Length: 311
Image 1 (spheres, rainbow, N blue to C red):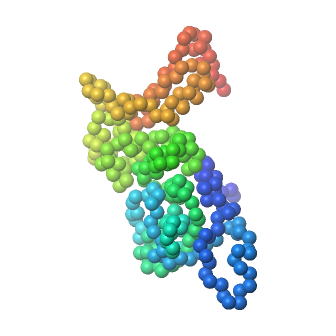
Image 2: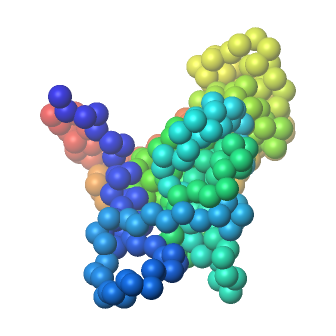
Image 3: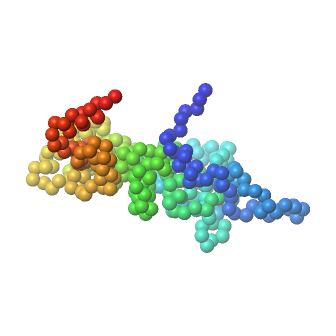
């Protein structure tokens, strides 16, 4: 039987960052016995990641950790007490400090090991920069499918703001589509109180996206929770609320802000594909967008229809 396919691009992005063929521990192994003959440097690099055991106190939480909440750990703690840590923690040395390592991936397991009162934990040590540390932390958490959408969005924003990555770059690394990355980042436009509702699991990402651009997203979010409204319910409600926001009041943030570089890039791709001037606008209603094409005559219209209906 074939195994289920991995998420698109995720394995490749992780292996490219982690370097499966060259990842070996960068700390010294335990002192060799007096009768040992071959020095450690005489051995060729192992093609498999070398795992060491380090005192749990030598590890610290990662600065680039995308996760902000570590809830519901009782089951993991019980498992660690019974079986120990079955998967090593990925760490990197802290510059200028001896016996100090920052966690890149596996902080939840490290916290569980502390609660289970383990004294030592298995680790893989890898020297890497902040960008790789943030990307690996994101990938590990996305693989486990329990990272909140807000924390995911914050991770994407850090990659964009601090490391100047485009949404296309981020999408390729984490194995998601570019629209997924763009729509996830848009959740950060919501008020902090609504973002906390997402973190607590009271609102799904789909429900939250339907609130973006509404005049009072917090009030609508609370109504969604109280009345158990679905994302589709909220999209319809947003359509009703939008005209009220236009009646002499300022335009919503989603419609008034300048276009992002990614929106402009999409417009350019459409223009190059169709040979027509394109204008792409976010409607302020969840993920809804408006695409306008400038068509001079019926010949151009026929060309567009032919390309859109071509099988």
